[in-house]
Image (tube, rainbow, N blue to C red; front, side):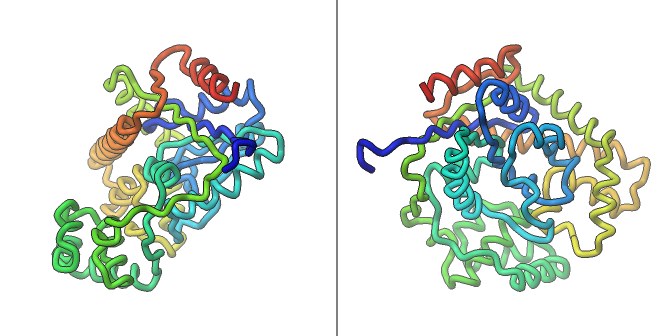
Length: 319
């Protein structure tokens, strides 16, 4: 890139679930002309609204949002698709005289954007269906044992019940003829982000217990807002099942399992506890990813002036 080439600053407002990322982005929109690029592996799905905490219709009318409601819940999305979308969207947004701002918490996608992608085979619907059928018949631990024969290094770091990762690792092995661990070893393929400078702003809690309370409150609000009805409608479609990536999303997975049991009133509290616990685990993983990013600017998401700090940080980088 020549010295005269303009560089586009792309702020990224990242953080664990319930850290206030969307609120900070909307507050920024009151000061800057921005468009939001969502980095959320669940909000890409149509019909998954309540449980993914999608921005409201009013928010989306006020500020353009991208990569929300772009695929059916029968489909799958990937880091590679996200990176490709960002490289297309950023210059389009800049051409509209607005600033692109990436907002969300799917850190695997951010890692791919910043550090590149491995050349792995894409999803194969027929093979995935076969693997899911095998799992229903024999159980995921049996497929984990199969993976251990094909790719012992990958199997060693996966739990026998980690259905999503076992399925993907087997898919890669069977499509490529090589263990996934061998394919991950070579250098990553760099994304086509020349001319873009990503600024990582991490919303991190100074008190983890307060974030846990926020998570519990938000899960309760989702139930009040109709999460169970939403999952029932998804089940009634007839083309979805709990092994799909969309239905493995936190909240949906726990409600689906409870409905499978007949939605016993005695089990409602256990379902709620499981949903909150899974969300806390997600937040923990998100924070681990964030804290491995030395270049980030960390802001306390519990601070009263969190949104103001985000806006000031963005202003410092855009000059």
